[in-house]
Amino acid sequence: MGAVRGTLAVVLAFLLQRGLLAWFPVWGVSPWLLPSVVCLLGLFQGADRGAGYGLLGGFLCLFSGASPWVLALLPLAGGVAGAVFPRRWGFWGNWLRTGAVLAGWEILLVLGHWLTGSALTACLRIAGPELLLSAALFPLAALLVGGEKKRP
Image (tube, rainbow, N blue to C red; front, top):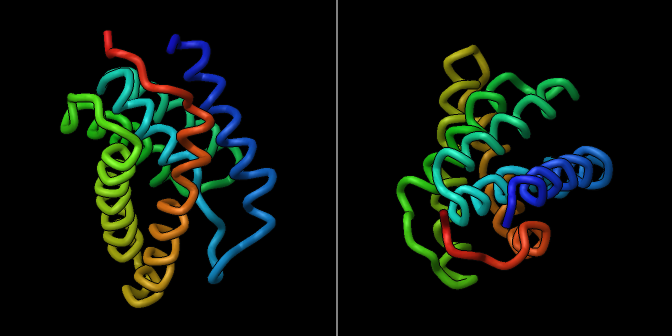
């Protein structure tokens, strides 16, 4: 998978997330597709490219009105996915590894919002459904990213 295809996957995931999924909240939250796509790109292409795709997605989200935390955490998620899990895995292995990175993503989001004055219970009430919805959207993220290839 080349850089152009990865960039297109990030842009398409952003458009789906903000243009379609934002209109259909489940359990009071809008599903996030972009973190799963960035994690998969990090798993498939390495930590540096995963962080780069996360930076692109973070800027897209920031310019569309998302929290600045997203700009900080998307590159971190892509980089950590590529650095911590350096080998290729099958669909379910990638799902578990992406889920682990997304759980860390939610923990950092909860801590960040809590430290800036939000109620901890409100943050946790949002984090749980977001994590479950991100895990449920993983097949769509895998479809956007495509088949895994050997990392460079």
